[in-house]
Picture 1 (spheres, helix red, strand yellow):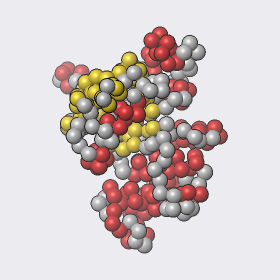
Picture 2 (cartoon, helix red, strand yellow):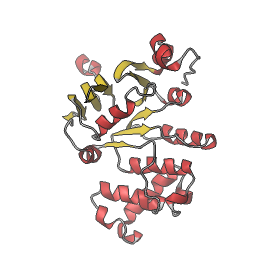
Picture 3 (cartoon, one colour):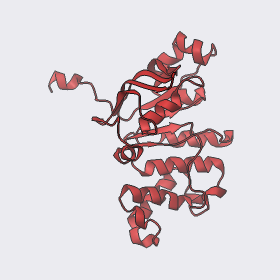
Picture 4 (tube, one colour):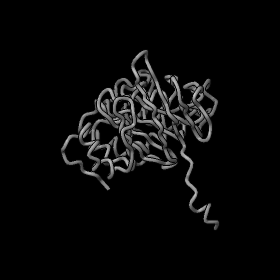
Length: 262
């Protein structure tokens, strides 16, 4: 095999180049150049006000950058809408779930699957109409451990189950990149492990970005980490490098020992 082919760098699935976002005189995202590799398990951390949410909103199309560019799967998507990015393969979850409380989990996932297949208008028809999509939805709910409540009203489910369902709805779209915004936020301690286990089992065909304040969860999940401070990228590297970086300890982690899980 040609040596140049063997040593060629893998192209990032998602990349920002000198990305900036200003709100009047406030610089919320400050010249951030960032790369996400295919199949990555990447965490985005930083103190409150660091600009994490603004950065994620720029990646997903909720906000438009003031300057710089965003590239996904080899295409410049800087001016794409949120919907265009979702169809192309950029999905996210939110700190507060965006589910429909009067649907069931099965209906919720079916809605996402049918939308992906371009059959969104007939998701409500009798299940026999698209048995293949129903079977896929049931299998996904089973993979995430919530098939036992698939016919219950979403609004009646424990919050941990709702968070798992939100992940299921996002995964149903078969994204190439999934941004998980504090997936365990508000979940009782007894249910957090299940969410972490589900995230760990997500297919490696999906590159994951985790936004999280729980450092034990971050270092258990992430292979690579980026640290934002005051809207700018302070440092990025492997989990081991970040755990031992004195700048990170000073501005965010403090002097406590951070345990890196292999």
